[in-house]
Length: 420
Image (cartoon, rainbow, N blue to C red; front, side, top):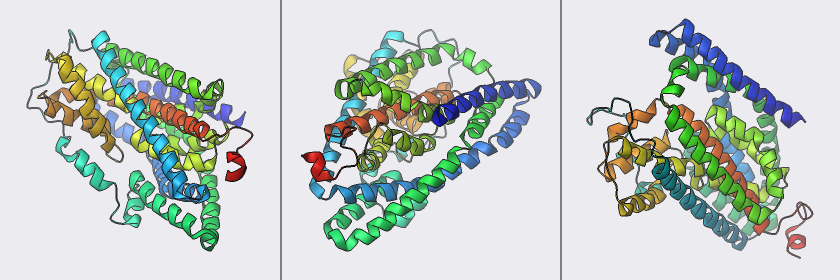
């Protein structure tokens, strides 16, 4: 009941934010004035997101170390990690392919009645900064402290894996340290509860600030593109839920019901970090064990961004259509495979989807300035991408838990009892 009430309050906050933003945009139509007002309104969202970022690093480290240590051996870590990567790669390919199919069926870029930007226009995105080689090098932190200070989730995961495996290898000698880390994780989760109470205010401010500067009109101008992209996301949701049903059965509907709150939070703030702590809490109610959640979920936030995957192919082909550039089937399949690799560097990169798209445009000799067509509404698109990522990662975590033989009866039992 408490979770449903918070979900409802978040939804009301989102609607009120749109109304207040529309009123502010109407009262202060001057762009500079609107931007100033939006800056003050978004102060609440900025504080909320900073509070979330404050706890992400210690939350990932403590829960993942405890989860790995409780697995007991490196064989378990490798087995679960292998299953997770199998799901992540499969889901990424499906998301990229579905985006490619839908954009070719719907063709939102055809007959675009918008002035196309000059091909030399700057997008202020450094496409050259993202490469698979750099991503692989970036996996290993130069310093664990630096990784935590910069909230480099993937680097924190790597360090936590080493720490947890080493603790498991030491057995009883490390039991005291693991107990302290476990208690620390409980403190961080309690802090998370305090922060999440501010979520409705943050959601209200996020929507109000966006509509104050952009106005409702931008939704009308780009209505066709927005509707068709969200329609495509809806199909992806059905595909993901269908895949979840094959492994989870009717429990998948309980999972979808449980993640309404993180879904709505991710949608309204367009922040995966904001949804992360509450997603962990809701998955435990399914139930999924902490050791699976703490291991799979942070990996998913780096490798399983289903909504962002779909958007990469959808937006890239949209830009090609807008410029009347014809791409062959072979070129589009090649683009899909390139995106499959380059998109794995998304984690920790600001405006990651746009950076990946910019790099892809350059690779296939498409005008990078085409990004200017969609940058103005990227906030609204990012909301859908983030919400989809929440669904995808929740399903992945629950499915891998089921692959490991977890059921409502076995959760909480020792590993030997679960295996029996």
